[in-house]
Every structure is written in structure tokens, then in C-alpha cells.
Image (cartoon, rainbow, N blue to C red):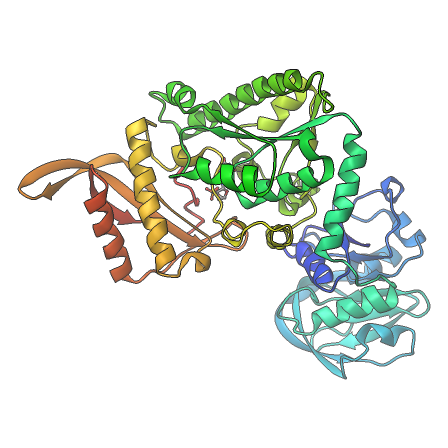
Length: 524
Ligand code: XMP
């Protein structure tokens, strides 16, 4: 494993992705991580870039013990140089940003390994304010650009390399080769990381963690994360994993049946469906504030999980699988982990969205449940790849995300059975037409929601005061920002016509042209 120490750059996780794409397993930890706290020894360490100046007070720095580990180090040339002498780094005259050509300087067989096979010149991407003003003692220059005399440096004897450019960015076209030279040839990491191995290791880890008797509870929504998580749990501990699907009355058309079929029948997971639509509707009656809606839905989920945990323990008594419910499965992905580990602190706005109103915290306190997170080291596309390997159907693997609170946060204002039903029908039409047009996989997330207001329309000779359907479709890599999907007008007109014709009570259909930011993907 290669350890990537994060100094807070927006692109730190890309270093990880590039390494994993090379088959080299890597983990990301805050740059301030105490080496003594690590339970494993990395084969090599990469320092990411970061927004702080190394010489500013309060800037984060690596634990000096990093240098005593006696493993190769790459990147973060400012941190390396500053460690040696704080006057080595200063603010440049101007920010250097963009493409540059780096001349590779041949030195000796030891340091030349980093740029091996990359020729005499390399196109690189620079983004920095500060620069090295002196060559640190013991170091030699291995790359230079027009503006940066020390674009690459290496220690004469020790395997310590610093580069000023960003090898993890696509704009450094041969950056992956440099990362390969470092991780495989210099660190000796084996480029063997495969998704299949990951699943086997994770299964072994879960078995050890959970032990012989404990039961694990997990929420299944039918989305790719919860399904892959559930399948891994099932492989690890069989029927001691209990999946719960709570029908909150705000799911999409036919969704419960589909989840029952895939999770329960096709994947053989022990699944209980809790039909709680009426309970959710009664608790949501008259509530139109988005945050209140989320909180009510979240706490109702917890009430039901608590009831289910008790029921499941009772049911398991006197069977070979008797035991206490000690664990709760959560489909946390790596971007969430990175965010919560960051020394900058978690970003509140995004976090609150991603768990349903504090679901895990309360259960952990109330019932002493511990969280089990089989996907915590994976990115979304890696989860999808594992899903495919585990035999999960392509249509589920590629499914657009759907939020825990469901349609309730897609209808502005009151949540009533009638309004949910209208949004559900309109959504079904919109998504079916997107699929028929072959556009589903080009869109990251699409849905139909409902406006708070109503609008006047005319059907035949009748005046109607109907509902307003809001269509939304976005493209996004990480769902933290998103751009609006650019449909043909004729497609949208066709969708509008079909919805007005087929969904009673709808007199108008509008398309939301707001990107994120400033809009969020969901309407609430
Ligand atoms: P927003 O609306 O914040 O959504 O732009 C970003 C992504 O997160 C999903 N989302 C949720 N998922 N529970 C979830 O499980 C939630 O409460 C929740 N709120 C938003 C949303 O669908 C999008 O993919």
C-alpha cells in the first residue's frame, strides 16, 4: 500500500485514483497523521499539494517520523524543502498556473528512475504560488521549466523526490507513468490491486469483525451502494445479515416490488419489507418545511429500525442464527470518508444530505450499534465495477441515485398521498421516455417533482387548476456540482404533452435549468 498524505488539495483523491488504476493500492490520510498510529507500514508515501503556504504559522505539516520510516517519498517538494531549511520556500512573483514543458535532467541511475521512459521533455501542469528559491541541501535538480528552476528535485542518496507539478491531473498527460515509476519501480509496490481481491479481503475482514454470532442490520433502498454492501455482507455472514426495506410511501413506481425481486430473490439476501407508508404520511401531514420533512423522515426510519432490531433478535432466538443485533451496515463511500477525515473538518452542507437525518448516530447511542462500512475505501465507479462482478444486474448497477427521503423532498410543500402519486406517475413517464430515447446513461440523475403552487390550464372546454410538474436532469461526476442536461426541445415538449395527457391533475410541465451550484440536485 502506498500512503497518500493529504495537504488539502482539491485533487488529492486523484493521486489515489491514478495509483489504483495502475493496480497499486493506496490510502489517503490527513498529512498530520501520526506515523506511530498507523497499523501498517506503507511501501512509499506521496504528499499531495495543498492550499496553505508551508511557512505560514498554523499550516499543516507532516509528522517528522515520516522521514524515519525509510521508505520512498514523492511530491510536495515545498514541504520537503521547508523541512530542511525554512528559507528554501518563498512566494513567487506570480501564480504559475497551466501547462509547462519540463526539461528532464539526467543525474544518475538512482534518481533517473523517476522519469525513466519519459524522454527528455515532459508536458506538465503547474498550479502554485509559492516556489523553491534554493535547492535544499543534499538535493539535485531533476526537472526544470521556464519559470521553475526547481520543478523537480531528488535527494542524491535517499529515495526522496519532489515535483512542483501535478502528475495526478489529466493535463499532465504522462503523469500516470511517473506515478508508476515511483510506486512500482522505486517503492516496489505490487501492481496487483483488483476489485475481486478487494471483495475477498473485505469479506474476511467482516467475518473477523462480526464474529460467530452477532447479527447485522442494514437498510436496503435498491440503490447500487446499499445493494453492493448487502451482497458483500451476505457473502460474508450469510443469513445473519438482515436487510430491511422500509417503504416510506415516497418510493418510485413499482420500486418495492423491484427491490424485493433483486435483493430478495435474485441475490438471495434475507430481506424484510416494512410497509410504513401510512405512518410516514401521518407524521408528515401539514409539514412543508424541507428540514422538518427530512428530520421527521429520518427519525421515523430510526424508530422502525429499532423495532426491527428487537423483532429480528426475538425471531432468531432458538435458531442456529441466534444472536444480538450488534452492527448496522452503512454504504459510506470514500469521498465521504475523505471529507470526514480531513483536517479542514467535514463540510456540513454536504454531510447532512447524506445520512437520513442523523440515522446512524442515534442508533449507535441508543442501541450501542456499531457501524460496518464495506465500501468505505471505494469510489462510486469502483462500487459499480464490484456490483457487476458480484452478478448484480446492469440496470441496477447503473441506476441514478435516489435519496433516502424519496419523493418527499422532490415535491415542494406538503406531502400528501395525492401529490406523491402525481409526482410518481410523472417521474415514471419522464424516466421511461429518457430510457426509450437511449439517454439514461448519459444523464447522472433525472426525476420529476412537483411545485408548491398550482396553475390554470384548459382541457377541452374546461378550465382546470392543475399541478405543476418540475422536470430535472443533470450530469455530474461526484454530485457535489452538476450541470443541466441539454435535451432537445422536441423531446421535452413530448414529455410535457405525455405527462399532461396521462397524469390527471397536471396542467403544466416545466424544465429546471439551474446548475448546482446554486441549485441543489434535489428540489429540497
Ligand atoms: P443535492 O440535492 O444535495 O444532492 O444536490 C446531492 C446528491 O445526494 C442525494 N441526496 C440524498 N441521498 N439521502 C440520501 O440518501 C438524502 O437525504 C439525500 N439528499 C440528497 C441526491 O439525490 C444527489 O444524488
